[in-house]
Length: 324
Ligand SMILES: COC[C@H](NCc1c(COP(=O)(O)O)cnc(C)c1O)C(=O)O
Image 1 (cartoon, rainbow, N blue to C red):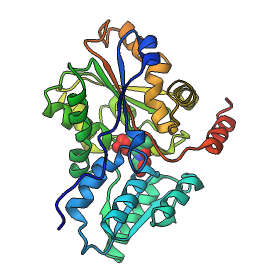
Image 2 (spheres, rainbow, N blue to C red; image 1 turned 90 degrees about the vertical axis):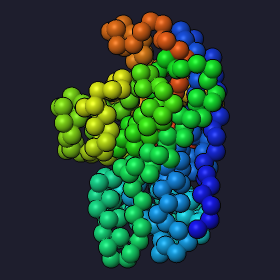
Image 3 (cartoon, protein in one colour; image 1 turned 180 degrees about the horizontal axis):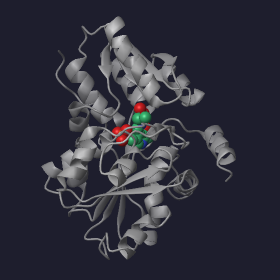
């Protein structure tokens, strides 16, 4: 098998003057929107595919809200193996076309990600395809952990907090793994979800893993009804400072628009959920509640997870649907 190589890039790490003004502390943006597949997913999925889907593979199949699918399709094309991506009907036509442009076979199954995942698992049995999970696998988390190593190499000191979005919990698990590895276990991790795609927050509140009845948020790429068990284990373990917060779809959309204006980059609603931690005052509220120090003990790092299910037409559609 070819020697393992990274499919992801060492993404830009940019200071945000506007976000720093809003929070009263230095804010750095880890721009995963710049990754070849459009989001951070390429880190874990590239690592996993290298390990379990060699040239002799009959092909890979991934169930996805869109971005794990984009990463799988991109990596499969680079490895010259077939890719089948199963997306739910809630994924915009835009992402289906992008997946096809990557050479993937795209199938639309079910209403939410969980339905698409059932079909992906079925295809591993019937067609002998290699299953690429979008968020729940140790090899994904190992790959995602590279983001923390890059941040450590770019920052002169330990961050005061790291902000990220949670869908199924894969990014969170990778960031925790990386932070433990580099000695940042005490750094608060602010986990952001949208109301209606809040499987992690629901588990934190219930004190156990729960399954949402449905995904009612427009942030479909956060749309897993159940968080991966490892993410919840980190809460039970209690060794990390993990804070779970929610914003509305409207707040996430406002964050997407503000980020576009101020940082000139267009990202998905799933990413807007993380950005809203700064733009909608969540950081300041947590400080007021004594859950974050004033000032933060170091710079705030925002993981700009990116996402490909967005363009001007989709942005306009979200404005209409969310009455903004
Ligand atoms: C249902 O969907 C899960 C996954 N998206 C997950 C996702 C996340 C959350 O990452 P996770 O917590 O799932 O590892 C954040 N930011 C963006 C832009 C994402 O696409 C997918 O594409 O299949």
